[in-house]
Length: 256
Length: 305
Image (tube, rainbow over all chains, first blue to last red; front, side, top):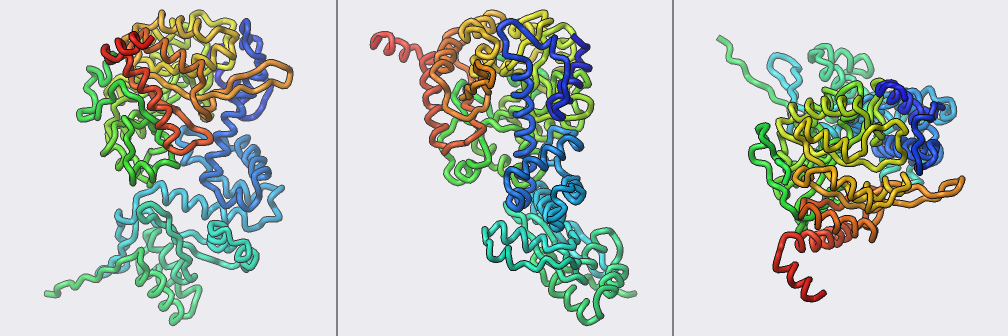
């Protein structure tokens, strides 16, 4: 029998990749065939990973069906097995895997929907909106947002697709405009639910810049680069300053 | 009874888990438990599902205000030759600090090798080398948590030709080396015996004879599946997806007769039914525990018999 570390490496490869391994040392009187035992472990491990990814990426399974989803997971696990027992954190690069997965190439929007699923899963695993972070716009103005707030930019209508899937609304799903163009979605957690809100492009780039730690001037410049001033300012006001997730505070400094 | 919490400086205000029947808390029952607060002696949770500060962690925080909690880890991979994942251990320790569980346990198995983690409880060869590795890892975990933990006998699908000791002997030596306790999973005894071609009662007796009774700090009960193999024969799968079988109930009664009443968990992880079904199973387990605890009840049963 090999040393324990070697044995465990071989078993792990056999279970997650289906690689053949020597099983002479596995046999024992009265025991099951080694192949049946290893298959039972492989079924359990792959089943656990599939369930974990199904919970994190529910929209993907709904879009492609259970059988195709299981095939995708098998291919993904073979090249990106989990590195931790915290399976809630497994699947970070699943969206980019999907974008390069040839059998799914016809579904151009799939990777974006997976990125939104991931953002929602992370929001649910993060602090509630009661936990805040302050984003400085200028010396007097602070925008308070949920600590777990993220803004994602998509080329495809990921939020509309997820909403239609969540509602089980096939008609709405069929009517979604799939034309690629920039779309921004803010995601955060309320008490027990993840909340998503689509932002107009100027608001999306403005908030993204603030979350990246760039100041208000840079953020405004980014917004003005994607829309005329009037439209940009109106979008920032309605989608951010007046949004339920944000609170703006303007302090009055005393001048000497 | 096992020293849980132990003399390592344990969770200060941990709600104790008495020799009663508890239930595994699973996601479909969160709402019901929080809203209706059913009469359940204690809940067991897998800490890997409640790490961090998300919704699940909030829910567990609310549940542990009303019920004692047992943390039953599945991912510490105590049998890994490469050691315990320090990041994961720190996350488990933080959760322990936050909810102060009455019991903490994991399995006599491994799940990680070459930096890769598989969500399964993989079998260890019961050798001196594996014992040394396991004891070292248990010590590391117990030091990090500041308490002793319980180690569960696993469901095994295969034996190792070069194993040098029985499962019971391995666990007994582990208890001696580390001061840990044992979580005796009676369903796993039945599953392992079936897969290794042994008589379940004989395997159970082997464990009970090898282990000091006071080292056994918790008992698990669950259902398992029996599947036909393509080439003939059967395999028992520890799927926790059905009621406890009659055979496992008999093993449980034997266990309680030998060691007395212990905190006993009804596990159900696949095809999870209504909470009422789990409570029925827990009530059945509680009857067995009550008989062991209450001498008057034992006399009633004796007279009736």
